[in-house]
Every structure is written in structure tokens, then in C-alpha cells.
Length: 186
Image (tube, rainbow, N blue to C red; front, side, top):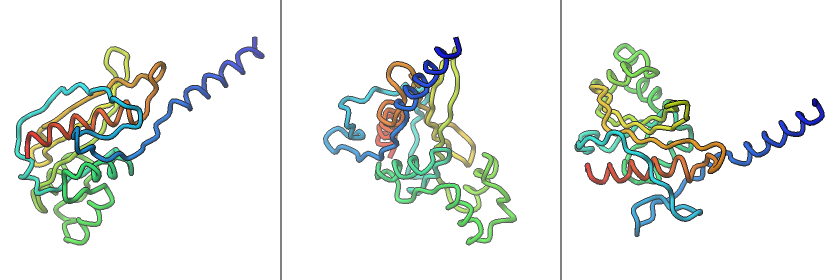
């Protein structure tokens, strides 16, 4: 039994590793307005929340958390914002503007809210993995940090078995939904 289980386990792990994310930053295709995909048509994300708002009130600045280097670079590639910040950028900004007493931490929503009030308005975009009915989903959420209002939320089912999870069938659909929402709310 043990001789059968070990190769089976190794095969399963290899298959799962092959389905991993590539995290390739894509340019926006000018003819479609969506991210260019090497694999053709990209599935659509489910948009849960898309509140009408003027993104101009955020002054062209967005903070991307929990998206890693890929999340920052992909947001830059959308050309929707003039300034794309990560966690380290926010901390350096707080120190350079001497705001440590007013914003002791940006690791929690309340700190981001304080920063948006004492520094300048910005949009906060983050990614979150949730489970619905025992199925994994990845969400992209855009929040106004000043009042912590969720302005946009899109999600995709993470199909680890059949389709695999990679940038083109998980992150690209989320960014495409976000791009579409942002263009409707300049």
C-alpha cells in the first residue's frame, strides 16, 4: 500500500505545481481595453459590488496591498493611476512627512483611514481569498479608506483541479473587471 501511495502523492503534487501561477504582468490591449492574454479569451470575473463614484477624488493615487510585486506592477500597467503605492511606500511616506504620531500603523484599515485624512485621499485595492460553500474564491476589493466604504468587489472561482490557477484565469479577470469599472468612474 505504501509503495502505491508515495508515487500517487508525488504525481498529485507535480500536477498541482504545474497549475501554479505565472504572475506575468500584461499590457492593456488598446482594441479591447482589457489585459492581453497569451491564451486567448479570458474568463470574466463576477462583479459583486460596483458603486458609481468619481475616482478623480483619489488624486490618481492607489495603494495596493496583499497583491505582492505582481499586484503593484499589474496595477501600474493598467495606466489608471499616476501613483501606485505598496506597503513600504506608505511607511516611507509617513516617515518623510513626519506623520508617525497621527498614523502609527498602516497595517489595519483604521490606519489607512487616518492616513487618507492627514496626507491625501487615495484608493485602497486589496486581494482576499475566501471560501463560499466549500469552494475557494479570490476577490479584488477597492475601498475608500477615508470611510472604509467598499466601492468595488469582483471575484473568481479558484479551480485548482480542472482549469488550474494562474494569472490568466484568476488575476486577469479581476483586473479586467476593475479596469471596466474604473473607466466608467473617471
